[in-house]
Length: 89
Image (tube, rainbow, N blue to C red):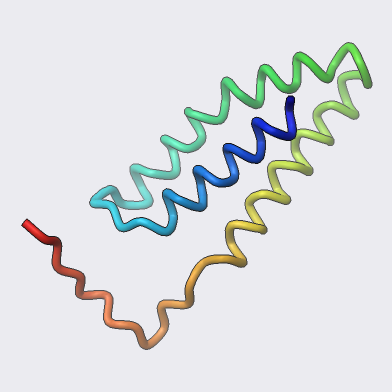
């Protein structure tokens, strides 16, 4: 259940990064944090009785960092790319 939920989160983040939006990183990054806080808290509370407090925190942190690096390595390089986008009206 947790892996399926994390898979959905990962694909949602990939989709959000791939598509151009008008929001800047200053707006988008805090929104990701707000959205994931409830999900990560539920996962932590579910794991805590099974494996303990510290291992739960380490596992949640490791999975979060793993997903962040997976998303990072799939970003396109923008060096030399024309970033002057026009939006269709």
